[in-house]
Image 1 (cartoon, rainbow, N blue to C red):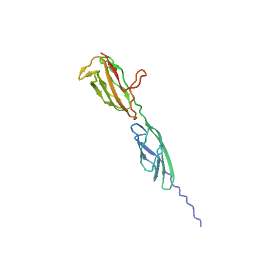
Image 2: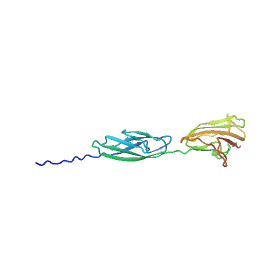
Image 3: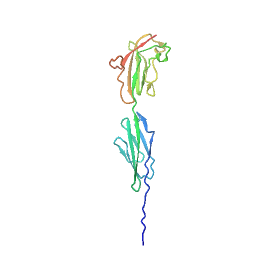
Image 4: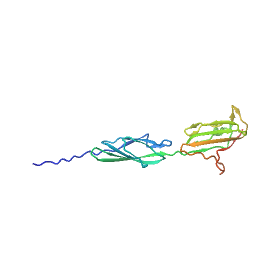
Length: 201
C-alpha cells in the first residue's frame, strides 16, 4: 500500500504599510503615523531608521530632528514565513531669517517703501517695537502670517504723522527651527537686535 506524500505550501505574507499625514513633513512637525496594510500577517516588527523599533501593528514615531529616515516593516504569518517592505520619510528643516530696511517713505509711490516692515520666514514668535529719540514707544507688533511678519509701521502715532527723522527699533525673534535671531547687521558691523530707522517725508 502506498501512501502519497502531501506537501503543505503556505501562502507567504505580503508586507506593506501607509504613512500619514504623508511621507514628508516640515518642522515643527516631527511625528508620522504608520498603518499596517499587510496581508496574512500575525506579527509586526518596525524599524524607523533612527535606532528605534516597535512591535505594534500601527505605531506612531516622533523623530528628534529633521532628515531622511528609512522605515522597514517585517511581518510574519502564522506559519512563520516573513516578508519585508520599506519606505522613506523626510522631515524638512525650515530656514529662519529676518531682514530690515534702514529707511522708509510713507508718501512713496512704491508700496514696499511706505512702511517700516521686516521681511523674514520660519519665525515661530517675535516682537518688534519702534521708539522715538526720547524712548517713547510708538508702535509694536507680534503679528505673523505663516511664519513671516505681516504688518509694518506706517510712521504714525495715535493717528498723527510723526516728523521726518531718526527712530529706533528693537526686535526679539524665535525661529521654528529652534534658533534665536542674532540680530541685524549693516556693512559687516556686529549683529544687533536694536537699530535705527530713517523716516523720510
